[in-house]
Image (cartoon, rainbow, N blue to C red; front, top):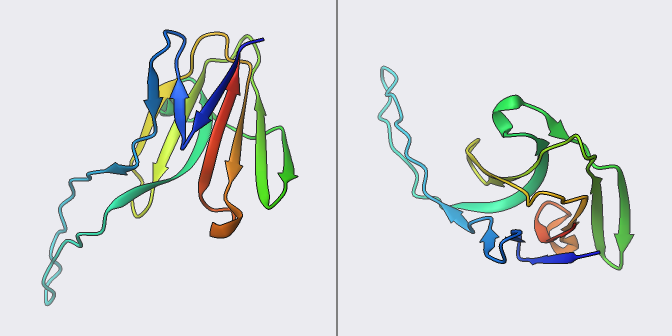
Length: 132
């Protein structure tokens, strides 16, 4: 059994390369002014904060729920198992936006766990680990 440890939301693919959920994304948006108001755009960065999985690309809207939840010390782990019929994708979410980045997991990936950070009230991903 090949174990892939994904540090800081990194994802090792089957070819040996490493793909990470980018820590920051740049979002282009336009605020439409409302009569009597002036429109401005905040310069707040959009930081990576959560990961989930989907069966196929996110456009299919087939978000997968974790199979079980556990605790390890002060961390919460969400465990996902994938069937041979599924095409699991990692979906990366960012603060202050509904924009996501997604990437198909390596073929043969059977399970992943997402470790949530206790220090951030379990709202931030500390690590993602997957196995083939």
